[in-house]
Image (cartoon, rainbow, N blue to C red; front, side):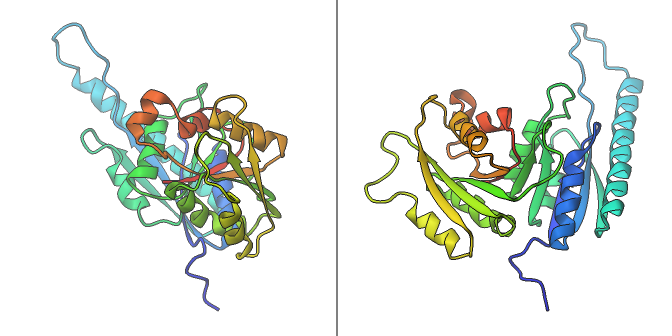
Length: 283
């Protein structure tokens, strides 16, 4: 029997340059569950040139050595990914790309436009990955790829059991739910949470539509509304996930423009900064 066209069959993972590379291990486990092909994306970042107060040119040797180090780091990351994928017994390939000035992440974006799911780690402030925040935004906006973001601490495996769906009725939230359906099918129960916001919900039974939709997919669904007692949607969602012992979350990314989120904050940025469970995002 052929696999359903709606299943997850083609996955990518952004391989961390250093550290335990738990996102790669989680991606390999998920690929094993879905019988998916997994591509490890190892990025070599163009060296950041320090600003000089003098007009002297940057030594060529410095630029060459920095680039060679970046490529060596990416190759080492790719080799580590291959060991993880081989251990999981999944079909895989490794793709190494250089991030070049003027092009940014376009090489990665082009590749990720044709994938079912991207797995990437949250930026670790104690061991930061080059331009990780900007890369996640590029994946969500430019590649338009569903993205499972793994916290840098506290999570060693993806446990699908108790899923939280952050629902606000927006188009990004709807896209995230559609993208998450194969993962939601693994869950024992799904809690749809709606954070109270002034003037947000119309009269009637808010959440009934998404609850019915998920139930029609055979999911065990419960819809809950919570007060925004702390004045922050992201904090309210994370508090709810903790109180309900949620294992992972689904949410739409950047309901407002990136510029507005940059200056005013927003649920997406708050979640990315303080996440405690894996979160599947889509825009």
